[in-house]
Length: 215
Ligand code: FE
Image 1 (spheres, rainbow, N blue to C red):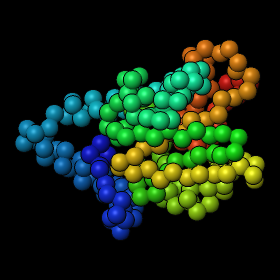
Image 2: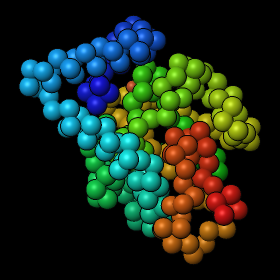
Image 3: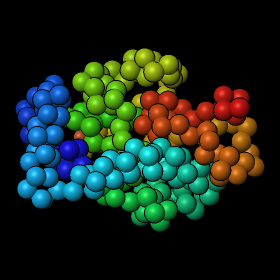
């Protein structure tokens, strides 16, 4: 179960195998779950509740509220950039895989994107469960080697002069991209702004929507 994965990145030779055998892993998890349930160690309803929590109740809408608030409230933005863990926790988005958060702000000069090269570390409390492509070997390897080409595959062509910085997540640190606030949103409420913040814009494989795209 992913909730329990706390890997150590120095064991890279293990990781390269771990993810090519997901279905086998799945079967092993399922078998273990059955065994533990039969022995009375595990309540299947509790497991279902954890999964439902991250599939339904936690999702990118949490991160979108964090970003919208940072756009609208300079003091919150400063706090987020200095201590993302505390700033995000103040909005009650805490829990598994979000114990130490770092927010990286996109600007006119720099575009940030996030990957976990070894597996799929991801900021669950603000983004929910990672998309399938985030866990793919192709994304994990290419994001670091040729980020510009990967972004182009996502339909995002950045000007050549814009610097791209790639952040490799670990079990210890999870990154949240703070996308640039779109033009034409002056005077918008935080609720309105949040509708422009996509999941991919917080991973860095996209930009926030502009008002025309969102309409
Ligand atoms: Fe990972």
